[in-house]
Image 1 (cartoon, rainbow, N blue to C red):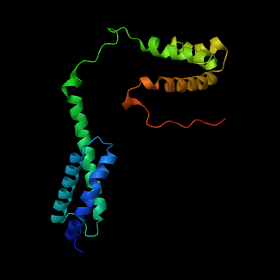
Image 2 (tube, rainbow, N blue to C red):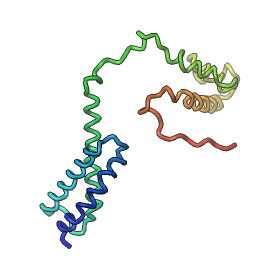
Image 3 (cartoon, one colour):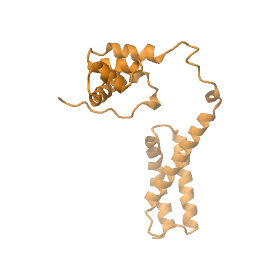
Image 4 (cartoon, helix red, strand yellow):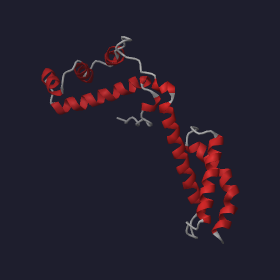
Length: 182
């Protein structure tokens, strides 16, 4: 079958599926109309390539169309992001934390450390929050430096989970690690 004929026969199927596919893959960041426009543009680009004989006759037309529309969607999302960054509201200066008398260490981190159960982990992160390095903490507590590293890592993981609600959505990790059974 001729590539152009296969492409035209696939049009209805492609348009019915592609809009919803793009919506779900973009997590709703593109409107349904934008996804439909992208699918139309992808189809037109592939038609132009077929008309110019730039595609092999045995190309998988469905996969080629899907890849073309996905690439256009990614380009659209990137352009949106650039526009959002240059938007007038983004050009407003960020508030100066010094002027508002907000100290995240004092207001968020230290209370979270104090709320931890009394343990070596808690003591280590308290000393670290006061500016001591590993060698100084090791000497103060009489613990090997590699043990300091392990305890601090575990404590910081605990604090990260506790303070996660204060982290902006775009800066959070996407997945949560499963807790180990002991």
